[in-house]
Structure formats: structure tokens, C-alpha cells
Image 1 (tube, rainbow, N blue to C red):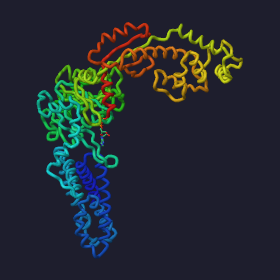
Image 2: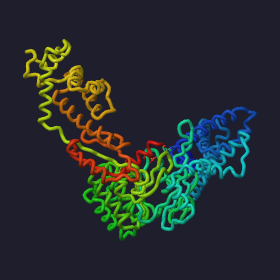
Image 3: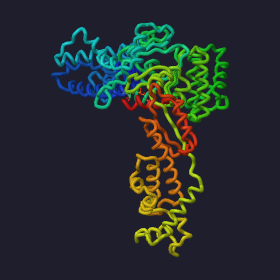
Image 4: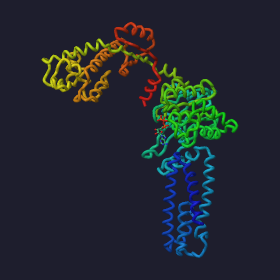
Length: 626
Ligand SMILES: Nc1ncnc2c1ncn2[C@@H]1O[C@H](COP(=O)(O)OP(=O)(O)OP(=O)(O)O)[C@@H](O)[C@H]1O
């Protein structure tokens, strides 16, 4: 009986104290594991100390006194209770005639453990009810004060202020002008329509690798209005998810705060959460619940009246095209349908704020379009909901967002409408040109020309002749019939390029490492390596087609670079070639169109397009500067 009590109480005390103590650390899961280990080892160590002290006559009375303190550790109570019970059974414990529940046997341990269960449980409830950042910041504050004291550093009254602004002070001045204006607008409170305000929100993760701290979000200040879809873009690790986690209360800010409908998320975390529907980056679904059960569960959690639950669930099943999957358990859904379900859960109960962390990841293009429709209906069309959307798809941001902020390295680098960002940062035009295809007559002519030269054996070196023989693979010797099937080796390509008048450029192409500085260089050299020159080389017809296409590209390239000073080559995908043309004041789109139209047939241009800088180029511009 006492053993059952000890086990039960020990389990409860450890669970309650672990949960309670982990509140004092920012990373709860890691902290819980650490606290568990500490429990185990302190219990063990105290038990050994107490046992040894109990054996030595001189320390016996001290041990009895110290046990009152040792019993504050659930591990010690448990071990001491069990040990006393075992000693009593063996007749080794003094007063072993007394009952098992006696104070000296298991009574003390059971009482202490019982009290600890109650105290830790109440403490946990208290911490749950406290503002989230109380515990971690106060403990951190105490630790840093202690460290300063230990190192003999004095702390002035201004230090806390400097600490909260120190990192920000330098960055605020360097911020982009739009970011600064947004900050001023938010801090001055002049943005009346906003329902979300982030004020100097900052997150530092402590105790990473080498116990270094990681500033995930630096002093973020912006607002989101009703009916707005705010695109929160950024590179991997820019701090988007961390920011969203702070808004939803998953993480506590290190400093700064956010207001949702005027309520501080630190002081009123529950009130803030009630207004938010959150779709996390990774689907938080319960494997064995069906789609319908998920929606019913969340409808009830979100307080939808029982009488309306069925209607609300049906509405979401239809809205997200999940009707045919309604009875499937979530583990059996495809990735895209899981995302749909996560977004549907976020939107259940029509929250005024919807936070979507990469909602369309893993969706096929049709499902993506479908999702875009749902999101845009929610924000821009219905005009009541504020949506914060993170995505790595620039098309998605372009299609949905009324305003965009780009984060790099925890800082907001720019903010504004997509058009504003394009006008402000897109100081060039994107020109894409697709040359006409190589025509068969041209191709046949070139193949024939090369064949004739190859068939003229009198000019060939001995090595080319043996290459020819190996490449044709025939044992009957080389004839004009089988030359047409030839695959070109490296030496032969160089020879042909010499005949065709461009040996130098081909030398780079046939080097055995991929070339990246020319149009087709990469493709051809990769093909040469892949096919392996020794096992046959490149078929003559493929080489001839490449050569002709390349000549077309070279002609376009030289004319564009010469006609538009400052134009830069921006890649070629094998079908079309891209340039960035500087767009200065006074540049006229009509002139560019006029020039290209005039020279279109001369340059062999099949299609071309001129566009403003895309969001992608602007994103890349910020990302490359990180
Ligand atoms: N629990 C944590 N402990 C320590 N560092 C963390 C923790 N969570 C995130 N970080 C770090 O904080 C930074 C921001 O991470 P976050 O997940 O917010 O980026 P993100 O912009 O959402 O990235 P992605 O686009 O890849 O989802 C990263 O450098 C990450 O390594």
C-alpha cells in the first residue's frame, strides 16, 4: 500500500514540478527534459549523501535535520521512502516493529510528496494565468544581474533602457525610409484602422549551439489593417514563423509587444488569441480524427454554438472542397489536402485575424489557385478580415497581398504595396527574347557541310581518323554513308569549330568542367560530360542544331548589349534569353518596343516581352544583401 502511494505521488509531483519549472525557460520542451534529469540525479545524489551520513555516528543527527530539506526533492522522498520500507522488511531499520506508514518509514516521504504535488500544481496554475513573459524575463533579469554582480560590473539605472534599444538603435537609423515611416506611424498611434500593431517586437533564443544567443527578430514594428492581406516574405530563417508564433502566444517576446484590437498580447494573451485563426507552417492535425471531426472539434473549441456546429463544418467542407474527404482520417490525406484542412481550421468561426504560415506548400497548381480564391475572398473581397500570409511564392504574394514586408535576418527590409515596391526598387525593365527556331533547311545544310569536311580524310590527323573509326563503330571502315551517324568527340568538335570560324569559344565548351558563363555552354559541356566523350560523344545533328541556335543567341546578345547601354544578360533557359535594361527617367517604353519591332526579323526574334521588375527580382535584391 505505501509503495503504491509513493509511486503515485512521485509521478504526480515530478510531472507537476517539471511542467512548473519549465515555465522559467523560453524553450519549454528542452527545459522539461532537463528538469526531469535534474530531478533524477538530485534525488539519487541526496539519497547517497543521506545514506552515508546516516551510517556515521557523528553525522546521524545532522542527517535527521537535513532530511527535512532533502525531502523538498521528490526524487529523494521517493527513494528514501522505498529504502526505509525495504530496510524495515529486512529488520535493519530501527523501530522496525512500527507500522509502514510511520513518519520514520514512509509517512514523512508520503506527506512531503503530497504537499509537493499540491504546491507545484497550484504554482503551475498560477504561472499559466500570469502574463507569459513574466517568468522567463524575470529569471533572465535576475541571472544577468547576478552575472554583472559576480563580474563586479555596476549597473546604472539607464541600463535596462539601453539594453532594450541597444541593438535597435543602430539598426533603426539604417532602416529603409518606408520601414522608418511605418515605425513612426505605428508608434505615434496615427494608424486608426489597424487592428494589429507590432511594437519593437524582438525575440532572442538563448542557449543554442555553444550557448550563444540568436536574435531571431529585431525590433519589428508595423501594423495590419482590417481587410488587408499582409504578405510577410523573407528568406529562410528570416524570423517570420517566430514573429507569428509571438502573435499567437506560442512564443513570448524577449522585448516589445503587439496589440490586437488594442489589447496587449502580453497582458491579455487569451483575448488576443480569441481573435486569431492560425494555420501553422506544419500541419498540426490529429492522425486518427477525420476531416469532419477536426472541424467539429475546432468549432467547439472556438465556441461556435452547438446548434450551428454542423452548418459551420459543412460550410468549410464545401468552401475548401473537402467534402469527399470528410470521413477520411487525417493521416490518409494527401499533403495538399492536409494544408487545406489546416487553413479551414484556421478560418473556422470567422476570426477577424487569420495568420497563414505558408498555406499553399505542397499544393498542386489547381489547388493553389483554389486556395488563393478562398484567401482573397476572405480579406480583400469581404473586407473584414486581416490576413497575415507568409509564403516563398512571389506569384502568391503578387496575387493576394495588398501590402508586403520583406524580412531578412530578423529585420524588416522594406514595406509597401507590391506596386510601390516595384516602382521604388525596380529601376530596370525585364526583357525576355525568344529566338526563332532553327529551321530544317539550315540544319541540313550545316550537317552536310560538316559531313563533307569530315569525309575529306586527306586533311585529318591520325588521331581524328581513329576517332572517326571508333565513333562510327563499324568494322567496314569509313564511308560517306555512315559519316551521317557519327558522334563527335572533343577533338572533332574543336576541329569543326575551327572550320566554322569559332574555335576559341568551343574550346571552353568542351572542357571537362561545366561552363556557366555562356548561353549554352553549361548545357553542352554537361552533355559532353554526361554522354562521355569516350563512349561516343555528341551526335552530329544535335551539335549542328546547338551551333545554329547559339549563333542566333549570339547575334541577339551583341545587338541588345550594343543598342541598350547598361543592359545586362540575366540568364538563358535554352528557349529564351533574359536581360535587364536600365530604366531611367526619360527612357521610353515606346522606343524600346519600336527598336525591337524594327529589328525583329533581322535578329530572328520569335517573341519578346518587356515588363517591370518582378517581385522575385526585388526579393532577390534584398536576399542577396543579407
Ligand atoms: N526554438 C529555437 N531555438 C533557437 N533558435 C531558433 C528556434 N526557432 C527558430 N530559431 C532560429 O530563429 C531564426 C528564425 O527562424 P524562423 O523559423 O522564425 O524563420 P522563418 O523566417 O520562419 O524561416 P522559414 O522560411 O525557413 O520557415 C532561425 O535562425 C532559426 O534557426
